[in-house]
Image 1: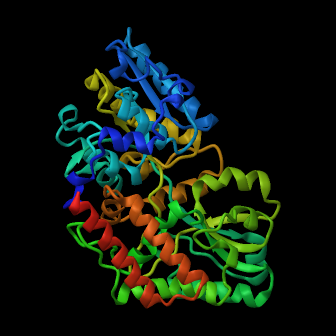
Image 2: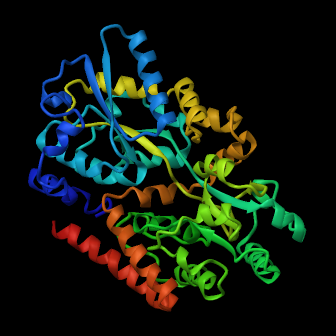
Image 3: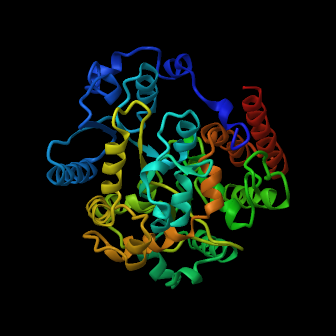
Length: 441
């Protein structure tokens, strides 16, 4: 697995069909049966683009498509909007050889598809210095074995939301600059003061609910100076003092009841609802929560920077865009992707859908967001703290399996009293087994 075992992680036709449920019934529902991907016989100047999208995102995609078609007469791009997290259907399409030309993909899933040769190596369609225009961590995320297999489109990240009414009543001041963000010690001091005040049921909560989101724990490890994998991405490096201390610090949140017990990894609790209702005074969550809070929270609220320890780190969210191996015209598909992630189009999309850009030029000057622009640009600034090494670790081919191990073991630590030492050891052994299985091919 990782770099060492990536080639053994490829999916055969049978494996893709198994992942996709072994049936092609879903193709018709997506409008792809018989004519979907370029591999299914579409004309070479026609492309299909599979995405999941909310209203604002869909409008952004359609606008970018319209402007590209206007500049390139005769080209037609068909947007296919499917439910979120449609990877099972994508697997089925790839297995049948009828995948769409273009797909939207989470960064954490790129290693899996790139190592399986499901996404096209874009190196031949890009200038040698093309990647220099993007923020380093996000450019790293789209590279597999040193070659880009997707292009970064946008990102999301985390910061600290806080209840202004409670903080004002208690006289708690928040950091106003990134370099002044609370340290772990300072953050816990604030949390304990909130608990003592009784102004909220619990001081805070962290948004990592759902087993598939357990990878978010990794940025606490990086904040504390640690890494989950070694430099070659071939072995775990978590069963050590730094890893144990990080787990123990997160476990302390639950032991001291600084967070609701219902907000562990495998919980389905929506912490944004707890925050909006005043049950918690702070939450560690993403910029996509801003529209919800604007509509749902009556108390005053604001955002400050993500906490830090010996290092800064925050969440690597968002999505990339890729060309699939079934495209009959990968050159045209790659050209459209370059249009989609151009400075002008990226700015349009991010402003319209409240996303964070991944081009250095846009990050440096900030964007003119219509909703809470000051808060959104705080998130833009925070996005620069995503470590490149963490991006590499989160995009290895078996990242989803590693995330499962993290979630299972952290849940044991937070909910059943499993020690930090045993948790670190179990995580390490679990990752080693994943690597061994990959090596056995």
